[in-house]
Length: 203
Image (cartoon, rainbow, N blue to C red; front, side, top):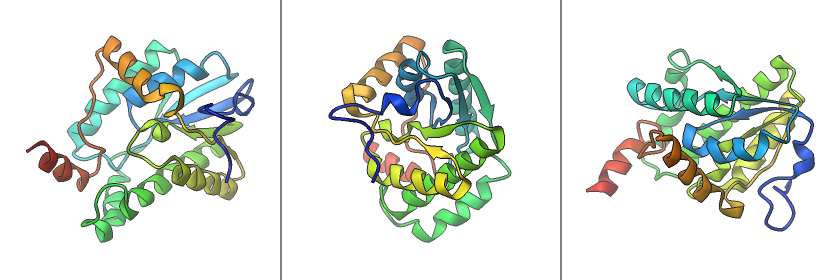
């Protein structure tokens, strides 16, 4: 299993310094701290917003608009990938795991679909490597995400950058930056099955 970095490092600097990296962003708030870390290090950095898991469509648009604000703030290229065309495929993939709680097989399927798409886009666009902001969330398993990312990279012949952005208070920093920018912060992970879970929690 690749390590995110030595000791308490959220990533290995040598994996990104002077390289071109395609960063999959699960949402705007989570990307803030990552961009703050990486923008001074990389040769080229672009953000891929590929999240057909998000339901409903108007929620997707709110998250995308927040991502546009962040991309302008850090002056990075934003690649807006498919949504409507791929959302049905994501819904079909999730359906067998509809009754599972968040963090189970449904989430693993979601991570894998998005990471494979990012690896493929990395190959198509000629980036050196790719990564994801998913590991900054305190609710997500960075070891699982890194394993899936590494496998996707191997499939498409590109390097995956393992991370654990929760380290060095990465999530706390993302919250602070999001507040400074007045970003929309979603109240549930994204898919149609995580929405009622959140509503039940709020009751």
